[in-house]
Length: 434
Image: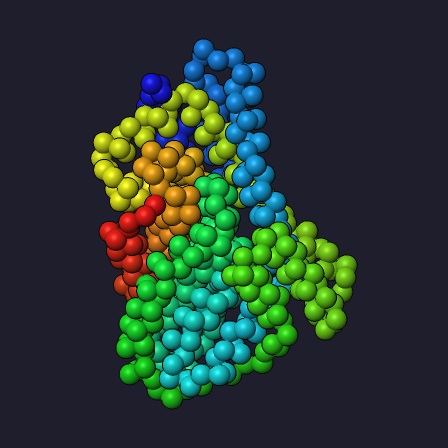
């Protein structure tokens, strides 16, 4: 019988208390802007790792280092880190003006009374191509504000629409941190996870579009949004998206995007080669924290598993959640709670991965289904957190353009995350074959 030791979960509790406690203090006690993101998450994880190392005196420090080494050397962890680097380089190469060109091109094709509907579609496409919800919100929120000003559409609705579309792509993109983390953590192909995930996300997106259409079209005042765009800049994004959907190797897909983006950026005179190399370095460096989190979490989880922490958690989960459907719901709520604690859906998935992997075996859940549930529920919770990066960046972007809007104005209009939650529950309810 596998040993169970609930005390082995102490490092996770230490991380949650420190990160959430300091975040609340910084954000609401000291009124520090983006307070949650001023906390060095790597330092908090290092403290949690120290706690894990101080536990279980029966093992020597060398034994614990060997256990951590085995956790870090997992092929999925190595693959995840390399993909993180390549995804960062890709974004560094193509730059963010390319995404703006995509947005304004699509807006130019559609009658202006459908502008808010288009905002959602554009945000979905851009986040699918870029693999980042925060980056999408940073780029498209100013466009949403311009749409609101020109056409008279409700500002919180425009911002919430951008946020919803951004979470759609964050959940599904082949180069999203969350997809990479979920697929490698559960050991499944990205295409398999995409197919599983798509049939949860698509109904939610369609219902959201209908709601957005019904609320926006009747309030159109006649304004038009027009901006210059360069369509050639969208080619690398389209190649990456198409390659992912076709099921090509993720390394090949990202390298294709990097090469095509480099050629286009240099050939069109948008950047000189030396600056391009610098941007590549900046893109890779931007993934440093995420990569370090993956390494530290792998170390912590290896020790927790050795001490019997995961066995204790699984025992409790199995007592509360019965059957495969219960297992899927328990898995979703687990990553959701991790996300509430960390305000970072990638970190939440990385933390939940080892436990979810054990749950998959115990409940008979396939790897692709587990990866899909982890990614989907993490994006649901992250998409509605008042103190999440997505919300804070959207409010900050609006403030920078002279608009005042609060999280409580936006929350009631975040239709996509709410519809995604309902769609996920329906998916679990009708689940038949794991």
